[in-house]
Every structure is written in C-alpha cells, then in structure tokens.
Length: 116
Figure (cartoon, rainbow, N blue to C red):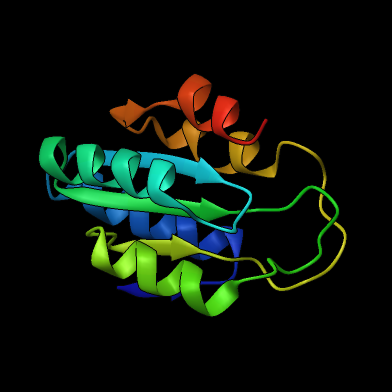
C-alpha cells in the first residue's frame, strides 16, 4: 500500500492506473476507520483493480487513530491511501481531486452515511 500526501500524486496515480486500463475504486473517509469502512474497502477490492481510500478531514486535523487507519486499509486491500498533511483544507477536497479522474466505483452516499 502506498501512502500519498498530495493531491497531485493522487491525480498522477489514478491517471497511471487508467492508462493501464485498470478500474479504480474510491472509498472516501474522514479517517478513524472501522468495520463499516473495511467492508466498503473489501467491496472495492473485489470489483476494482486499484483501490483508493482517502482520509481527508474537513478541518485539516489528523485522524485520531492514524496507525490503525493504515492497518485497516492495508488489511482490506487498499492500494493507495491518500492522507494529506495536516493543515487547512477546503471542504469536499476528495470530491474536487478524485472524481475528476472518474473512478469506476465510488460509493459516496454509503461512505458519507457511515460518518453520521
């Protein structure tokens, strides 16, 4: 699993995957991954060639359980984990970076509902 910290690297990695004809599955999160996230990640793994999990918190703070996030992501078959460096981010950063690159599988509604 590759941990990415910049939006440019996310774009590049997704572009490379598409150029190779790979399907990219996106599971956007705010971090603090749990069994519900792991389930979504496993579905993406089963249906796609490349799985991208994003951990983007709207306030730019790091996730509370960063180490366990990486373990859960790795164990669930994530290829690319986008964890921006702490700092202010615009709300919807994942939406503005990743879907422009048209991931084939993006379960945004389910992932968002898990955050409630």
